[in-house]
Every structure is written in structure tokens, then in C-alpha cells.
Image (tube, rainbow, N blue to C red; front, side):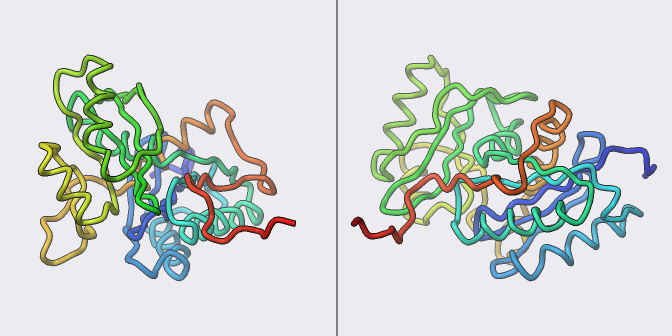
Length: 247
């Protein structure tokens, strides 16, 4: 590639299976997935491999885009802390991308309607409903919904929007029992239940979520939407398990 291209690094550590990607002039061009346990130890090595393959250095990055969640407390903190460190040591700007936006963009070609469903805790998920296509448009949510109510909640939301068909489910890291209940209710699940590299799973043909994060991050930066490195924080989408005791 030419060094004049605008390069943004995308980082997704919101779930068990993370990923990292490069976008050049707004289009994802290279990526790697991160296995469980590699979110911290694997980020720098994976980023260095991507840059080296493209003939780039850290100083060539215009920015770093990070999935802000909702997602794993630990995973989100790792990804954002790592990105802040790189930005502090370079001229790269930091921008945040919602996991709802990233998952909808990743599956934008899946159909007319897409539901992004992000696993929470205490029997809840967070979900949003999108019109699919080259430029997905969010029409409902994000909303917190009990897992047991998710099939009916999506049906009701789609009905209010006059959707002609049930939305396809973009749901990374969903519990097996939730995947089963959605399938029984007639929904089609877009994400495989196992990581991209699992030998027993059909390979996922799409670039990982970090590719969408990088592309959306590039848009953010072009629009002047960057983050203060001291103030940027994840959007966990749920209350922490540990709380400060009340006085």
C-alpha cells in the first residue's frame, strides 16, 4: 500500500473471541482473530503482524477505533487501555464504536432486518433492531430485555416497524440455551456458536467484528469524533457485579 493512505486500527475485545483489523481509506484490508485468553497478551503481537504485512509502522496510524461495548468488563478494559497506551505514545487519535453498530455493520448484507443481540448477565441481553443494507440504520433500541422474553420482544418491535420478515440475529457469544430458544422461535442466527478457528465449525466467511470497528472508526475520525484519552470509558451495558457499599 502507499504510505499516503489513511490507516485506522480497529480493536474488538468485547467478547470471548476478540479481533483486530486495519482499515485503509475506510475499507478493512487485513485482520486477525484473538482466541480466549489472548486479549491482553495477543493484541500487540497481532497489531505488529498486521502493520508489518502492510509495510506500516505505528506512526503511520491515523487513529485507533475500539469497540466500546456492551460486553465483558475485563475485555473492554483491556482493549481500551491498550489503545490508550498506543495513542499516548503516537500521534494516533482514539475513537469509540458501539458493539451494536459494529455487529450490524458486520452483517449488513444478511437481509432486510437485523437484530444485534449482546449477551449480558443476570438473565438479560441488550438488543437493537436495524434495517439491513449497505448502510444499516438503527430503528429500535438498544433495549435491555430478559433472555426469556427476547423472542417475543423482537417480534413485537419488528411488528411496530412493519417488518415484512423476522430479523436475522447478529449475536456473538450468546449462551447455548438462548441460541436454542431463538432457533425454536424461528429466528436465523448469523454468528457461529464457536470461534472462527474451531476445527468442528464451518468457517465464518465474514471479516471479524474488528473490521467493522475499524471502518466505522474511520468515519468517526473523518467527522471529527475522537475521544479524550483521559476520559474515554467503555459502555458496559450493565451494572458492575461489585458495588461500593452505601454509607
